[in-house]
Image 1 (cartoon, one colour):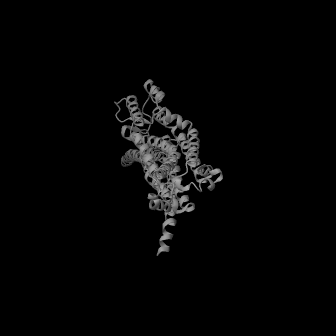
Image 2 (cartoon, helix red, strand yellow):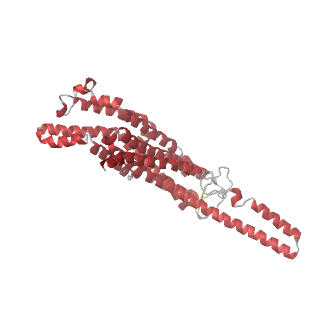
Image 3 (cartoon, rainbow, N blue to C red):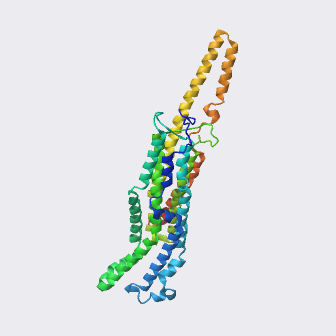
Length: 418
């Protein structure tokens, strides 16, 4: 059982590890690092791009609206006025801007975590004959290669497809408009039909374009958190974690691991709450016209943030918890053997009439009680367990909000029909 720092060279600087940290980056490309360092340039820039595309739509009105389009809004800039004054879009950009801020706060501590585990002796080789420096360097190199894997583009493509599908099926027209266009499409000339289709696709393009920052930032964040969570899980498979039951952090000296996982949970939690709140607010204030957008928001909360929370947050903590439980059980068995040995000596001395030796053995047994697993509060989590409740509560609230939004949208109409 490893409960103390057995490695005498803990904290020793290793030239190869130092060289690794000099070139380590959580984000795989220079553009990604620049984008997250200057995230505000992209959110504001894409907002201005949306305004520009809206102006293009204003100056290229569809054929069926030529008579009323210029008079429908101040100076005819219908889309521009909509983009500049629409509170939902402004709230969207403001809420999305918080995601890279939360992610940046977490990612700055990832390298410090893995450095701290090595330098403070919190990891040890499973076999005493193995070279920890070599094993740990190989583990970190593998982690870096996974972060740079081309598989990360799959996440970006899936999110982009999700967003384009939302905008394509939502479209610029109400269901009534679509039925009317379908019935009268043949009444338009070929050029006018092409203009209708072009306007529809252009509307989808600028709506999807306004969400491109979410696609890019979201894909990069999901991949980085997923890979980091997976390699935190691998720690218990590849190394022994050094648990110190009496450590002041009350987490066995592994609080850094718990802090990293909890820091990773914050942007995931925020994204889930934002999507659920967005879907519910859409149904409450915009009605059935945007029901598909609300459903997509709920689907994203359930199909993206929840699985990511399970894989990147709960799975690593579960494996660390199981490891610490095994360590506690081993400590309990070792303590039981010490106590049984002291009790056996007490009985032997009493039977032999050696009261002085029996009293010494009894004193030893009393001293042993001071390091009883329950007396020292042997930890089984790398953080305060109450934090789990704090994390689950908002998740439950987001699902409740989703259920409430769908209920008020669909149940009353069904009741009226009956």
